[in-house]
Image 1: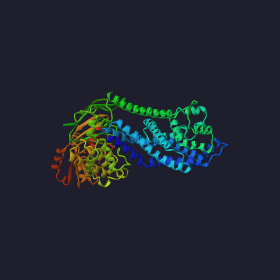
Image 2: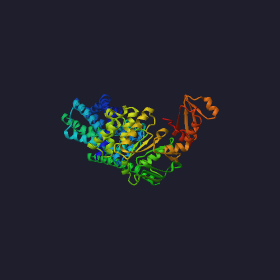
Image 3: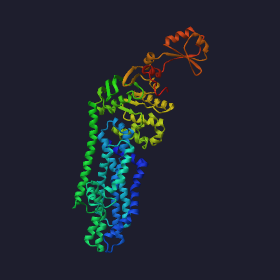
Image 4: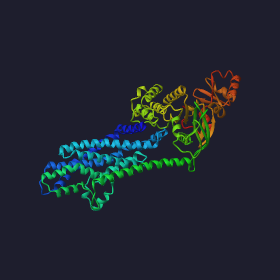
Length: 303
Length: 302
C-alpha cells in the first residue's frame, strides 16, 4: 500500500512540478470559462430569450441559466480533456526509459499501472475542482439558483465523469510511446470532445441523426447530468416569473437537461448507469491491455 | 562463490542473434567488466539479467536462483544504473531517492537512516533539495548510483555509466564506485566501451556480435594479446635506428614495442648506455580490445 501511495505521489508531483504541463492545464479551464462568457454568453442569452419569446423574463434569470450552462459545459469538457494531459506522465515514463527502470525494481507492473490511473484521476479532479470553484464564483455573480442538493449532485457528476475520462485516457495512452503521440491525441481530444459530448452546442440544436449518434457516446450522458444539476434550479425559478410549465420544459429540452435516445426520454438514473458502466468497461479494458502486455512478455520468455 | 552464473545464454530477435550462446560467471564481490562495441550484446545481457528482457534459451542465475523463478527476490539483489539517467529531472534528489526506496518498502525511519548513509557516501548533502535537472552531469550520475544502491543490493550493474561524461567527471564517478566496493564489498558488473575503465577489473569478458571472444583478468589479456612497451626519454633516435629497433615517437619520447617483459629486460641490460631514462609498461586495454575484436573501441582511452 505504501508503495502504491508513493508511486501515486510521485506521479502527481511530477505533473505539478512540470510547469509546462501544469500551468496550461490549470489555465485551460479558466481560459475556456472566459471564452465561453466572452464569445458564447450572448448566443445563449439570445437563445434563452427566444424560447420564452412573448413572456417577460428578468435579466437575472437569463444570466443564471446561461451561467449554469457555461459551468456545466466547462466541467464536462475539463473532466475528460484534462485527464489526457494528466496521463502524460505514463507516456513520458515509457518514452524516457523510466518505465523500464521502474520494472527493474520488485514492484508489480500492475501496481505501476494502477498508480498512473489513480494519479491521473486525482490530478484531473483537482483541476476540475479549481474550474468548479471559478465557475461557482461566476454563477454567484450572475445569479445563484443552485440548491445544496444540485451542487452535491454536480460534484458527484464531475467525479464520475472524471473517472470516465481517466479510464478513457488510460486506454488510449496505453498505446502511446512518445511525447509527440500524446500531444497529438490531446490536440484532437481538446478540439473535438466539447462538440461530441454536447458541451459546446446543445444536442437539441443538432439534426436528429447526429443527435442520436452522439447519444451512443457515454460522455454525452455525463454532460447531460451536469446540465441538469447546474441549470435545473435556474430554469425552475422561471415559474416564479410567470413562465408557463410547457415553456420551462421546452427550455430544459433545449438545453439538454432532458436527454432523449431515439425519441425516448432518458431518466437520470440511466445516465448514471451508462456513464458508470462505460467507466467500468474502460477500466476493465485497461486492465486487460496491461495483462496482455505482461502475458506477451511471459510468452516470449518461454519461446 | 559465483553470484552470477550465465550458461549458454541466447537471445534472438528473429534472425538477429543479439546474444549467441554465452557462458560466464561473476564471483561475489568481484569487479567484473563486460566489454564490447555498441550492439555487441552487452545491454541485452543486462536486460535479461535484470528481468527486463526475456531470453530465448540458456540459464541465468543470480545468487544460485534462476531469474525467472524468483524475479522479485533477485530484483532486490540488483541495483541498476542505465546508460541514460532514469532520474526524474523535475524532482529533487531527496524525492528521487525517497520514491525509489519506497519501491523496496524502505520508508519512514528506515529511509531516513539509509538517506544519511547515502548522503555521506555520495557527498549529496549540498544538493539534496535541488531538482535533478539543475545538477551537473557528474552530480546526476552520483545520484543515479546512490539511487541504484538505496536498497543495499549485493550487485551493482553499471550499464555504460560514464558515456558522455568528461574525463574529470568520469574519474569522480569511479572514485565513488570504488568507495562503494571498499565499504560494502558490492559486486560491480560494468559494461563499458571505455576500455581503460576495465583495466582495474578483477575479470574481463569481451563480447562481439553476441559471442564471447575473451574471458580473463586484465593482466592475462594484456599478456596474451599485447606486448610490453619501453618508453625512452632523452634518447637519440639515430642510435635506435642503428640498432634496428622498431620504435615510434610519442610526444618527446620514443616508444619501443617488445614481446614481453623478459625481452625488455634483456634489451635494457644489453644497452645500458641507451636506456638511462625509461619506463616499461604493459599494453593498454584498447590494444587488447583491438587485438581480440579487430575493432577500435568507441570510447578510446580515458
